[in-house]
Length: 61
Image (cartoon, rainbow, N blue to C red):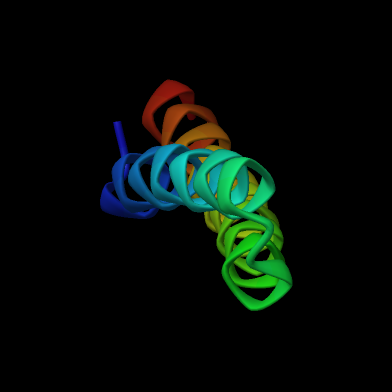
């Protein structure tokens, strides 16, 4: 598994926690940060997945 995928999963989890905490406390800034972290994590996860696919493809050929 690529490091980008691991970091992406961590950022998504951190974002979910911030988003939930922001909703619970009424802190819109914290909630927005959480949404940004989740989006960043999804992108990192996608990049890592593409790298993994490329590596697998190259290993087969």
